[in-house]
Length: 119
Image (cartoon, rainbow, N blue to C red; front, top):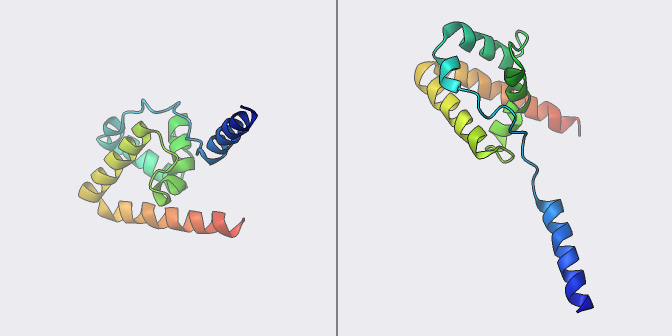
């Protein structure tokens, strides 16, 4: 009985340690199409992600902060909705503005190299 308790406690601890914490879902209700279909908003968000201008909203800032890691890790820490948002964004840019998508991917790679070099 005591061994079983220890096994259960160790199992719970391991599950907690191994479980990857997800990004906050605070902005999961963001509507990507309203941004992507509006030239001004799309440019503001793009410039935010590229760090060429301040982020126009708190949700833009949040997604800009997690973008490089989420893209490079295939959204490992994303909620299901964040995976959907990233796919919508990726598909839109690949179809409508592939040059900007390439720039975003290149920047995300550079950001992750800097982050990993700092470890």
